[in-house]
Length: 96
Image (cartoon, rainbow, N blue to C red; front, top):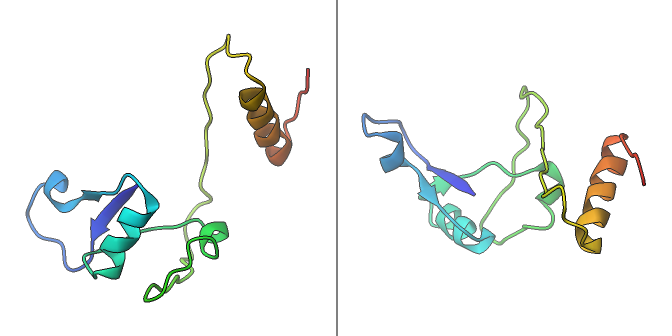
C-alpha cells in the first residue's frame, strides 16, 4: 500500500516523498501520526475503522479497475474459487 505524506508538495523526488506500509496497520499508523494520507476503497472504510482516523468520501474520480492474474496451470481449488468469485462479481462468469 502506498502512502503519500500529508502537507504541501516540495521539490524532492517522489521516492523521497512516498512511504510504504506492507501491512494495513503500518499504513494506518502513518496516517494516525499525521505523517500521511491514503486512499481507501469505500467498502473497506468500515473494515479499517480506527480511532483518530476519519474516512471522507472522495468524489469526481473515475471508477477503479482491478485485475487479477494467475498461472495458467494453477489448479488449486482456492485459486479457482477466487477467480470464479471475481468473474461472478464482474458479471463475466464462465464456469467450467
